[in-house]
Image 1 (cartoon, rainbow, N blue to C red):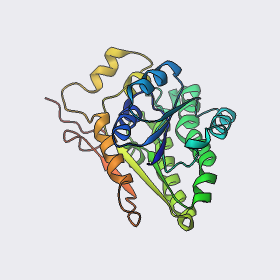
Image 2: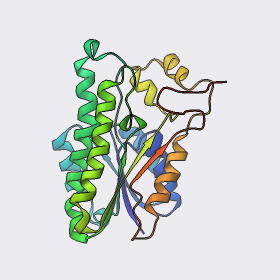
Image 3: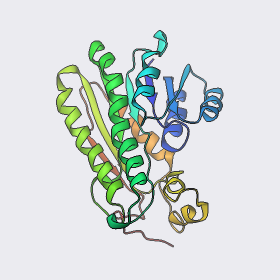
Image 4: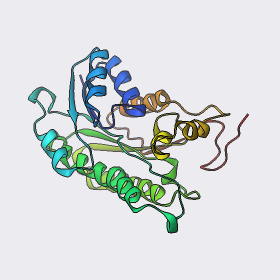
Length: 247
């Protein structure tokens, strides 16, 4: 039975992956900021679950929470670095620096903190799988996406660097870069404006969180000699970050 740790498990891709992996028999460590949602999700899942409540941006909280994972969950086979955020859409000259900090702290530093906390165990057991959730914004930039795109370019670079650094420890590293996925992503970006967020997905069939969860499952279930390095996934109606065919 594999043990998988998922950050950002309270919604979207993280929650969909938790449900799929539970059905596949994984033991799960589910991490997020919303304690109530984690408790609700734990009740739904027919598998062994341990929950951790912390914000990946808080280095002390990350290391403290992971240090005290119960012994029966300690040997982590899969780490899904899914937690992240997008805040605002603006030119660089009009950008909100608090938004910049939130994106760089969550998307880059948070990923680093969690990975750093988990890696000693994977190195000791000489095995493991790290999956980093990036974005098509890791591959190209788009108007007003400057800092978000920069943060996801960093995820892409870190994934490649991790693969080199961990090559001698039998630890595989993959990155998945989705296009438009219909989750709470846009609601966060537009700071709770549900109407504006809904408009992002109107008129075309966006990817669903389940689509990405199934991709994560495929990647992490390959034989030990196979490492799928990098996957870019668009909905059929999206040709690149700015080209969408709406009905």
